[in-house]
Length: 172
Image (tube, rainbow, N blue to C red; front, side, top):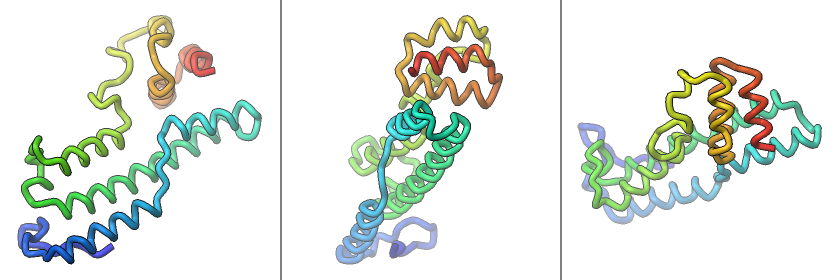
């Protein structure tokens, strides 16, 4: 993709012609059209179905989803960085002007990439201080995406079989 002209401070130069900006936006649009957008939930549902049908193991499914989500987040971060380079300097920096529609789009995309609930919170408060029984008692309040977040966190940390089994049962 053509890169925007740079000023000495590394921000997009304001001397770009409308034609140059149009070309850069077209190049970004083309990159977006070549990409595939799948939600983490949809991807997880597809591999969960493959596991249920015996087409792959749970371990292989988790590795596949993890790798694809990681690659997708990297690609999205690159696209967002390209978009931010095209925004005016005051908007592309950390100024976060609430009135800038482009900044709002970038912020929403960044929250989506972060994989959190938008507020950046884990689905169960004080999770690490709870017993397995306390956690399993709270699972019924969670939606499938939150259950998967709990399962992923539990696997990376305490890896308690009772919690993982309860999450899998809630997802079934």
